[in-house]
Length: 369
Image 1 (cartoon, helix red, strand yellow):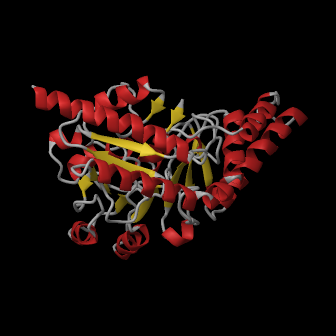
Image 2 (cartoon, helix red, strand yellow):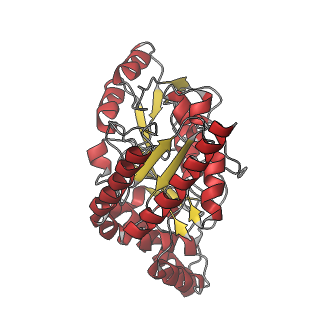
């Protein structure tokens, strides 16, 4: 299988699996005071430090969660802010975290228009939380987070950033982004599925949604998932090595797009004119169903996607592309290729051979009809 769906979930390294296995053999509950419990606690705190270091944060401000969805919900619901301002290209876990949200404007590339944030915030005296992702999971488009955060702070708003796609692909820190809260996910960086983190800036606090035992400094009750957390920490320790390979992935991605456009001139690379993640390409050939493209690639042993992974397992039109002004037909015709650190040139060559053959076959059938 050629795996070109790294934005959905990244492959787990042998080192991460080994670390998880070791942690799973540790019997104690991290809240217990006996030696087994203290051993489990030490593993959790070691991982907390590694995740914090990855983004230049303080370890005590890392809250482990069941994943990025819970972290995003905790940031929005636990902020205590009456108003929630989001962009229309956010992950559903942000868009659906609150029943009433105020929507920012984005341009044709899906980049938030800073003036729209200023307009929304200057029109009310109520406290607000602004949530904008660092890099889009579907198009790879990078937002001007530091500039947006400065605007939010000027009006007394908190700023939350879903940064799950950025580690290992972009160089950043909590301080460089100037955000109050940051969401991360382990399985996007080669860690286990089912664990994420919400990281707070100094002096920022949240009201925990899950009450009970008081774990995670009363911000998120429930016995910690020691094995997954340790795997998250191990993946975080290896992130600098992943970042070192980002230039190679950008070259592969750029070559892929050049060859696509040379062979299928009507193809569109969404977000290509602005700053993007180096591993992500969102390609549209209007009128060629994304669902049939995904199926055709899968039958050839190639994994791609048509946007973000959803629980239904069905291919639906992209809300991100619709927010960028695309028609329903165009939004249903776009596929996402997201390269992994392990992706090779031969993987790209094989994908292009199969994909271009599929596009040609569809066009030939359309002409014949």
